[in-house]
Length: 151
Image (tube, rainbow, N blue to C red; front, side, top):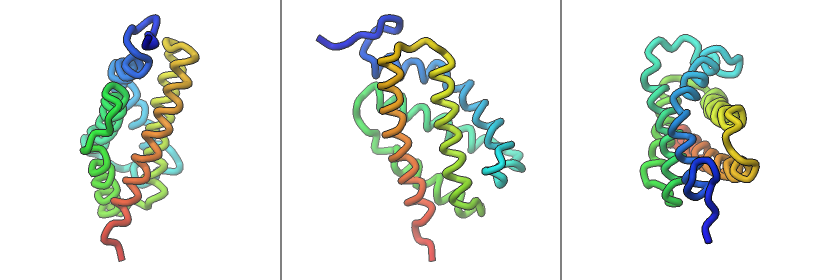
């Protein structure tokens, strides 16, 4: 018998996907504020047109929720992160700042999940595992894109 989440219904993965979808806009806004002020992301501070950054971070949360819901890795995810790596390199961003920005998005996602106190301890553990696996792969492909055709 599949496990059901008491508040959201469905499987824990589906409940987590729904929770991410419901709150992702707030997390994107918090991430944007952080990336524009964090000492480790100085190249992001003076970006006036933030539409691409917002789109990329919204896509991150969308792909994470989609993966949780379907249990299948969408074939668009890896190229998406490779494109981000290439674009940030071409724009002159140091790799460490690109990775720092990704980790800030992860932190805002996790802080939002924990602060909401809507999820059971079991679902929070499931979330930690899924988020870690997702970000590991996303960061790897960001680095692949950043390094592609370099030197």
